[in-house]
Image (cartoon, rainbow, N blue to C red):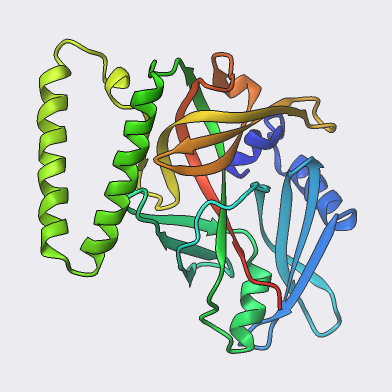
Length: 294
């Protein structure tokens, strides 16, 4: 079973028979169906069913010449809200199946964000029509988690909040300049990182690391679309999976100036979530490319 199925409230599926029944339910009673013909002239299909508002399962496969659907793989998903980034996205196909990974170089994070592409069918249609690259796209990220902890926030006054925002804006400007080869910007960023490392190294002996680091976003493990994050909770809601009666938290996080939604099973979350507190955990990052309407 997919590791992150429990994140959307299916922690009790332990055998292949129950999983097969669930996937048949998702295909037969799907809420949305998408079909596209790829460059190899194969008709691909994707059936998605919501089991609570904004979260569900997608079943993917292909149709033969008799319009018979053959299952290939499935994945749980969370529909994100809002826009996470306006940076350009590069998409690459996975080697083992007709699924895709997206890469976004967002300067706010400082690393290349690699995510699992949810809306592959619209992308395949655009690719088949030779309309790539499309300008003016945006990206909505979301994530699933099976292990999380709620932490108290770092107390800051209004002046400190404004100072942090100004520093983040300045760093984004310097990152943009460094991308274009500005040597002064590269040197400034290097010196800032050295100063930060020295400051943290000195204070870490007497202070807790999570009182020094407000948020972080960094790769985790060997899979390229999994990350360890610490972010401030800016919104939250609790939904119930009607099939299993399991409670699922959907949290909106602000992490390194990125805003995105995550969902986690209530039984996998340690602590009581609340707006203003922080979430710390490992996430599987998903993304949806918002193509401009024609």
